[in-house]
Amino acid sequence: MTGHVPTPLIGIDGGGSSCRVAVLVGDVRHEVLHGPANVSTDFEGAMTTVRIALAEAGAAAGLSMQALSLGTAYVGLAGVMSPAIARRVAVLLPMRRIAVTDDRPTTIAGALGESDGAVAAIGTGSFVGRQVDGRIAGVGGWGFHIGDQASGAWLVRRALEDLMLAVDGLAPMTALGRTLLAEYDGDTAAIVEFSLRAKPAEFSQLAVELVAAAETGDPLAARLMREGADYVRRALERLGWEPSEPLCLTGGLGPAYARWLRLDTVPPCGSALDGALTLARRLERQQA
Image (cartoon, one colour):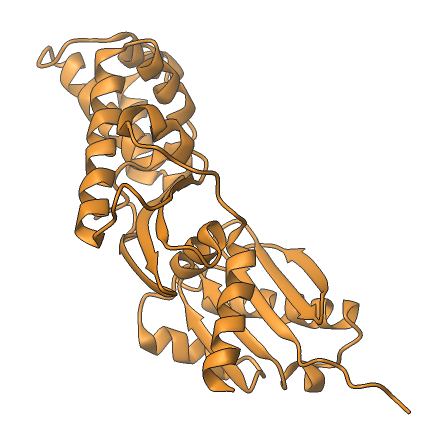
């Protein structure tokens, strides 16, 4: 007699650089990694990647797509900016119980687990979120052109703006400015050309140099880090975060803000993929 197979929990975490899918059957987790899955930049390509990764994770767990369809899934994908986009994603996936959002809730749930607290996720982009009694709220994450304050792309764009003021003699030329100018061999036309074509990830490549310059006291770099930290503090206040609650700084640049925030922080409990599974489990409980 064949034993009962637990209903699978499925977590999907997709972004601009990778898509990760985890299938949890009982206590056994099967995980696969594939390429980018940002539905705002390439919807069809992102969904093809998600479906391939889902099928592979299911196969690793010994489950057919029909068996996976009986499971509960939480899908966090970069670029899901409206309920309409979430519905487009959901109809292309076979699960009976499914929730689709952007990747902010999965990041927050992954970092905090079941605890109350807040997360400042700062990398190429940025957002700040808080979890209370399992409820998640967030601010930011509006993208490079109109948001992503404190992020790596934002910091470097602001630094290049100040550099051009310094070139024109309208602001002091700092060590960071000279470093940035040297990156383009002193060619201001090359800086302008870069600013017109570059994507956020390309801006963010120089953020490490900016953070290092701030640590050594460069006035421009330090001012920008203070501005970024001020944005994070205001976002935390807006979300009602209390200093007695945990605060996680995640992403490539998040930990660099610890000095500038002057707040106690804790390491994240897990990844956004862990968060997707956590939220899938909550969804299963809600719909049981």
